[in-house]
Length: 380
Image 1 (cartoon, helix red, strand yellow):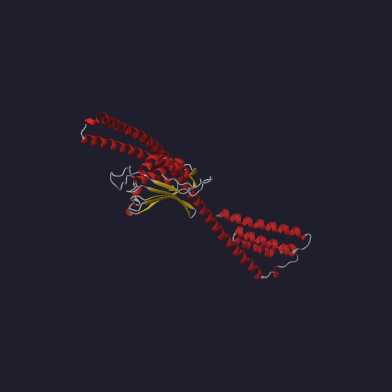
Image 2: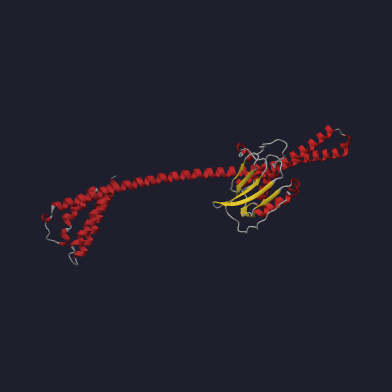
């Protein structure tokens, strides 16, 4: 406290000394009363601001009773107006008061700023710890996903191989000894072969569903949807001919996506339309339209339809709404939803029982820089 007061007096004396020296220097050239008065006013303000109340008052008295002698050696203290001195003292007090308030505010700001900096450092350190924990968790999950994918590959192979052998030997027994078996035994072998085939297809579907979920987000590339649909239809050529199906499609856009997954999406939707065809030959239409800057692709059929209560359930794994009269693993539409969602889109169904179903989905709104193929209509 004493050191601070001493600094205040020292500042006041230094300001007065500087003002006096400059005033003496100026008085040798001409009595610049206004300039000299301004210098001493500055000395008062500096003394009041940096020194405080008492140094400011001392500077006022020293200026009032000593400064006039610099320009007028015959100056008499009687010429001093008490009101002017009082006014200068009031100005000095106000400046000192303002200085105290300002210094208090600055101190509070420095304290607050220091507190904020400490909190920021603490939060930054906490976020760094959390980020490190998240990185470790992400690495752990990546390793776990890789191990799970590897395990699912091995498990699928280990499951499929015995099933393949069961199916092959059942078929061999039927061919070699089928004539010697009674009708019940032949029916048992037929059921055994059908169920082993179904189980193999189910294992393959589960493996495919697992792989799509464990892969990183797809690397998008230009995908011509018309071309991918044509390739899928070529794969279903025998099924289409056998069922007498008629398929037509609009010119489809070229969008950003992952080619293999888009092909799998069309394959699952076309297979679903062929399976749940109803009594009449299937009629399937693939449509495309733009709505609010987004492409909506539809695969429509005239099959048995879906009750509105099951419009969401059909996209869950293993949600079979019908008995063994319809083939399928009950996971195709779940694969479709996973593919569409991984492409940033959504998929839904519009359907009523006996009136067919329209599966609609959106993909990435970003169009690929390739032209759309010309319109094509295929009838089989």
